[in-house]
Image (cartoon, rainbow, N blue to C red; front, side, top):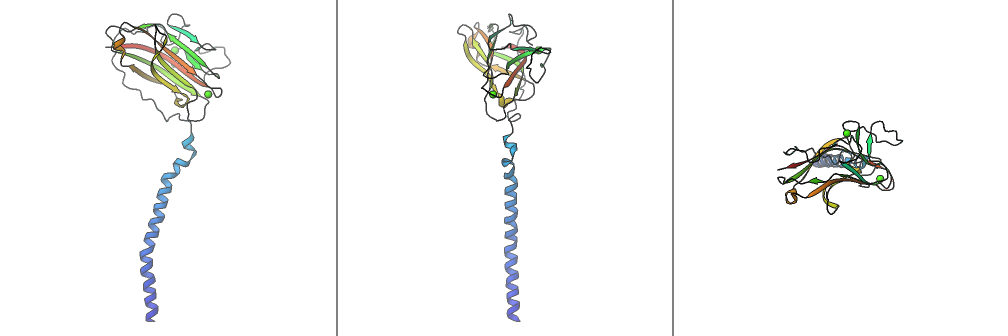
Length: 233
Ligand SMILES: [Ca+2]
Ligand SMILES: [Ca+2]
């Protein structure tokens, strides 16, 4: 009888020692799997529409007058203010254009906007008139509304939408203001870009150039409106 009681006591002591450890291990495993599971779901492979949000910074101070002060909203045919310098199709699109293809959105403001890309193997270029950097300017400030639409599904850059500042006498891109792509697809947003070292180019002529390149499949639309170019003292 005494021996039986001793065995029962030993079993009880062992259970009291082992069971809490087992319960802790089970809880830890559950906790580990619950934090790791989201990285394995399809959510990780959704198009990066919101993965690269573009913050809208506080607009820096600028000085009048606007340096590019005509047709900021692409409401007029490209003459004087803008020049279509390369591409297979007209790049200015207005609401109600009798075209088969159209972007899936309306202009940001007014009736018209700049529409680059939208077809396979696109190579579109659109330049502003020459802008003289004022003798008081230390920076060039570009404000605009932009939007990227795409049929691409994977979060890699296949089609690009870029904005450059061109050196007019030489005619090649001197500075990059942005290089968006299909992974930046999302709603219209207003952004401000600052070319900080423009002061060394006072009196020099530059222009801004939008360009778009697409690969051979799944098109991307690069859309722009309300473009303003200012100088900052
Ligand atoms: Ca417009
Ligand atoms: Ca593509």
